[in-house]
Structures are given as C-alpha cells and as structure tokens.
Amino acid sequence: MFPPLLEDFLTIDSGVSHVIAASGFHRETMRESLLGHIYPQAQHIPVAATEGIGSTVPGDPEQLLALNADAIFSWTWFSEPLQRLGLPVAGLRFSPSRKQAEHDTFESWRSMAALAGRRTRAEEVIARYLVKMNAVEQESSRMNTRPPTVLFLYLYRPGLIGAAGGDLYTSQLIEMAHGENESASYSQGLLNIEELLMHDPDVILYSCGGEDADCNRWFAHDPALQPLRALQARKIYRSPAGYYRVELVNSPLLLRWMAELLHPDQMPHALRQEYRATYHEVYGYDLSDEEIDAAIFVKDNLASSGYARFLVNSENKTEPKAATPNAGTGAIQKERGR
Image (tube, rainbow, N blue to C red):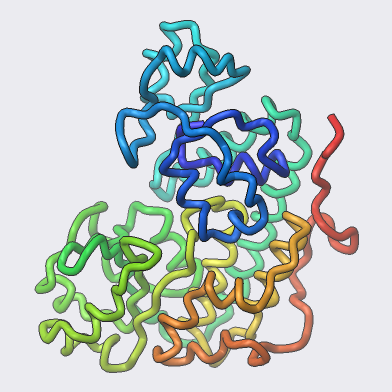
C-alpha cells in the first residue's frame, strides 16, 4: 500500500488483517489520528520499501516481489515499472481538483473494495458521504447573510504559505459552506505576506505543517500580520486533524465545521454530535470527548472567536435531522463475512 490511502483501505476492510506492508510515512501518520485509536494494530504493519524516508514512491523491487502480495496499490503514475516486473499492481488515480477529486476518490474506493470483497460497505460509505454533504450544503444555502470572505491556508512553516486556489476541492467546500474563497483566482501555489495582507479576508482557516507545529504562535507574534482583519477579529482557525485523510468520512465533518464557523448565528451546534454519529455509524466506535477535542484542536482554537460553541456541553441536545443510508440500524454493515 503506497498511496496515502491506508486509512481508507482499513475503513473499507474494517481492519488491518489483509495489509501485509505499507509506506512507513503513512503508517506513522496514523499514530495520533482517530483511526490510530480505532485500529492500533496498524502500528505493527511491516514497512514497505520506498525511495526514501517520508516517500510513498515504491522502492526495492526485490523486496516487493518477496512480499508475494495478491495486490500492490500504487498511484498510476508509479505503476508501469512495477507492472513490467510482473507485480500485481492495482493503479489508483487522484487529482485534488474540484472537478476530479470526488470522482477519483469514489473510483479508488471501488477498486480497493472490489479486491477486498467489500463492495457493499464501500457503496454504503459513499452513499452516506453524499447524504451528509448535501445536508450541510442545503443548510448553508439558506443563510441570509453575505458570504464571508475566506482564505484556506497551508502553513508549511512560518513564511511559507500555500493557498487553496479556486480549482481545488477545498475551495468547493468553502463555497458549499456559503463562503467566498478569497484566493479563488489562484491556481495552487504560494502566497507571500504582502499578498496575504492584500487579500485581508474576513476569516482564515489553516492547516498546519505538522500535527504538533505551533502555527498559532506565528500568527500571534509576527508583527507584519497584525493588520489582518481576521486576526483582529480573532477569526483564525486551525482545521480539524486529518481532514484530508479518508475524505468520504471526514469531508462532511470539515464542511460542517466550516459552515458553523462562517455562520455561527444561523447554523445549529451539531459538530460534536456529527463526529460521534459518524464514527459510530462507520466504525462502530464511540469517540470520547477528549478525542473530539483533539480532532478539532480545541486547545489551539479556543481563543478564537466563537470556538466555545464546540466545547463539551455547548451543543444542541437535539439529534441531527440528516438521514443516513442505514438510519436506525446502528453502525454501517462491516461485511465481516465474504
């Protein structure tokens, strides 16, 4: 397993028993993730040979041959050399563009599910994703206020800033949450501080370069950033952990997180309920309050405007009204039999 889809495959297959090796980089990213709690055995999956530390490019072909795998998942653009060796490569494709991301994710899931004998489970999760995304989009479409301007930033390190351009799936999520992407005219690329100040959005959402990186400190202590309206209004928020992994499970949660922050006076307090419902229905796992706090970076975001809505006991007590494909039947069927 070389693409960053280890957690997706574990979700499809409901466990680690059929994974005989995976990229060390992606195995390590699970260590502190919610799926790392659900499938702690993933830390013991053997590491597959790659081109180097932190790489997901298939490495030593002799080691790969020795694995005697029934299937080797690889991105299509790395597949040809492996196929020439006679390895059973299952090529997967992914594009981050708004036109292709969802389609490619569906097709990757269906390819993995077919090989794992889990087609029904994959289709259930896909159907649930579509229902949940549509539910939040419909709620957001009823907002009667001006869409706030938003920048979604990727903070690789202080001063090195990426922005979600209009061609990315993240930009589509901003629009679905009834926001206006301030960098919609950009292709994926970097912003300098001057460009960031020029955009001066109402709200800044950001992904930090590492799970433990202190990006808040950069915003708070860089004098050049102090004129930002979002900083002055305390509307700078670190995005939920691992939002870019297992998108069919986590994208509806990210979308609801965005919508509740962009429209705090009109959107119901439902995020924590949705986290609990999602992980119970998909994984049969009951999240603790501490796990939800860590996933939505309560500690990092608590000083930001309105984030107290996400604290324990601050949510509405009514159940979410959005239907799910398996409503009333408990967790989505895990297809433990073949």
